[in-house]
Image (tube, rainbow, N blue to C red; front, side, top):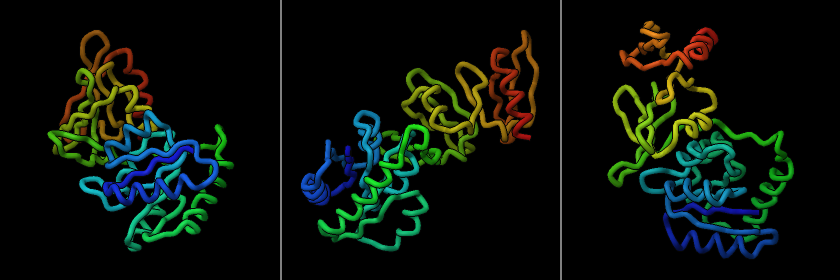
Length: 238
């Protein structure tokens, strides 16, 4: 089993790591100190399960769980406060470890994880769609809800997430991001993708190109190569 521990407090990380390493079947245990570190670790380490502290600065464990790209690890929340239990299970958590916990309680959690991993086959493995994205700008991490994004535009090695009130930059490829967003957007140009439900008007241009006018007034380019797919998506959305 490959385990990722995410906690901003080093003593808590070290304690859980020691306890996990006493258990059989641990292939590797790694730690992350915050949500951004955790997302990078998930991409490189590919954990089977992530133990997420709920109360962390800037981005909570629950917000991190909603930002994990597919295929996402199983999630166990770890916290000293029991008022988050409902939110934790709404986030599809396997278990909820209440601090302070002992080895026996951790073992029960690991039994649940192992059982879920046994049931997780390539055909049956599913992850919840990503519901929000974590964007770091000038040292501050912001939570951007996917439902607030109107359209997406490429900018060198980044994408611009256009919402009604902001245009944050996320270091990601457009192709990679669209794969995470589970069909919520349709590509309309080699440099852009749009949320079909927000398109109010299609304005024809020269040579088969067109422009998509969104509900909020934004105008998004649509190339002739993508026009048929966009129109089909609009028809299905309506």
